[in-house]
Length: 445
Image (cartoon, helix red, strand yellow):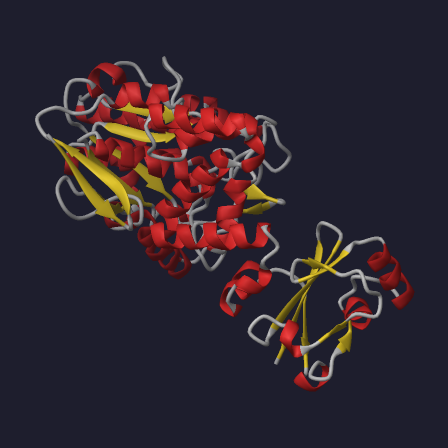
């Protein structure tokens, strides 16, 4: 029996009845995890196929938002839930005050406890948009500060520290890389792996958790937890390690022009989020549709077949952008971003509402102008120089003659063209673009 639930405007959660979906096959088919020890620690595949298990993934609140790079772990946790397994999302209220050295070349700046808690609250909201924390087989959310903070240093050394070999800790790749660097590693970050391992043990004892999920950079921390459970509890635990998802060019996922692509709409607008996925290359498209959406393999195959017939229409990118945006921001927002994108692509800036234009071009350079300056019409060459789209009026005229100036998506060919209040979207906004990339937003106040 399969029950389909609606969540955040999307079909998000599948609960099975007597049997669980084969999560191992699903992860392998989507290439989320590699076959063998690199993707599943010893015995993990067999353990997962024996019935529902309890699995967790951790998210440290070292920033006030998760980013696109976290989506692999979030979606994989949701896949376990869809397959009928019990999932636990751990927010590191305690470990977030320390910082994980894995994948980091230098020491993190320590946050205050208040900053970490505020970040944790935001992250909990973001996880709730993709993972179902209510209804049948609901996920649970925990904070490791509940069991780490009450412990004294003596308790920690006696009950946790004695189970760790310093030799083994030094052999972890994340530690070795830092030791070889000029900066080295602090004792604070060096002990991080003991804290994450203790999380696994605490969840094993409190919730019967037997599987930890994490990225390839977490392999050492995951195996440390497995070892701690074996030594202290005499039980077997397992790890599922998701592969590092990169572009065909070897670039890490989650960066746009060097900046992180956040899940928080205030840090990365839904439009910019949508456009990030629209910029996916054809070489990455098939991979991303499988990893970052819940679309079944057959559906992905059909999308790719249609896309390759007319790649210039970007059917694959549109499917990817709509699916991921719907998961993070809701289906209604995804549809709105698709509409806005289509309007802009067609040059129909005037078809947008003022608030939509404000959102889309929030990061664009902007000049505020008085209504009296435009009511009688203002020369476009004057606006070009004011907006630094041209260094001089003669340069502005030359650009117009070359066909390189656009006002609200429409090419301007008249060097003496004047812009009136009617040319401003909702009487407030006019977008000037020079060439393909340089643009400036003028706002009447």
